Length: 63
Image 1 (cartoon, rainbow, N blue to C red):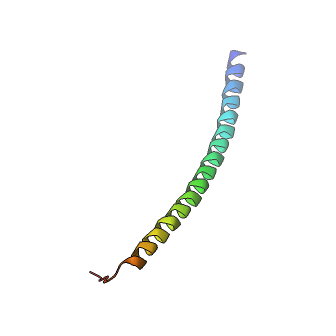
Image 2: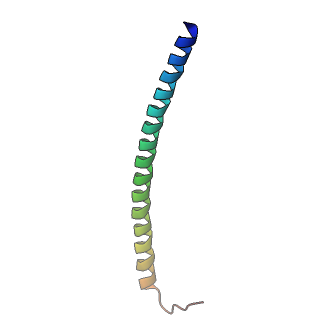
Image 3: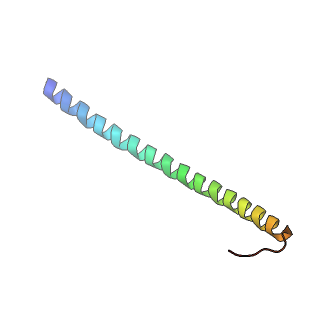
């Protein structure tokens, strides 16, 4: 009887672990998508500021 209960408990634990892993994976995907969108917006802002500053500079040379 104890062996059956132990096997059942392990099965339940495995099911819970699979469900928890799926929830965690979903949360991580959402986090990475949000961070990606945030970083894209920040990069766009930085690029715009650099372009604005370069517009006011004169005698720019490469190298």
